[in-house]
Amino acid sequence: VQLQASGGGLVQAGDSLRLSCAVSGRTFSRSVVAWFRQAPGTEREFVAGIWWSGGGTSYAESVQGRFTIHRDSGGNTVNLQMNNVRSEDTANYYCAADLAARFMTTNARAYTSWGQGTLVTVSS
Image (cartoon, rainbow, N blue to C red):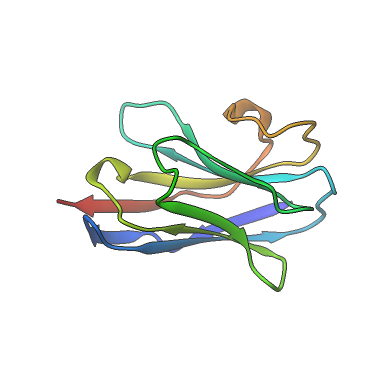
């Protein structure tokens, strides 16, 4: 499976931004697509994830209530709607897929397919 992330940019605190992850290739009913982010000098951290089949979601506590992950109606794009962004949301954002998930994990090592990063910069 191939993933391509897009939508990053420079925004001000309090603004909204939508990231998109185009998914191509074979997926499986037990696939999870997730967004991670990594700021300079920090480890890659889980932001949000969605089951490819069924649509169940999970969020990091730091973005709960501000970010929404959803799969578009056409089925092959996973979007991350970011509302009320904060300076601490500044990072490179990556989408990733776990193709044989037994459960949704926040551990980046479980995700075997990764897209390139898209940079989000939030100015205060």
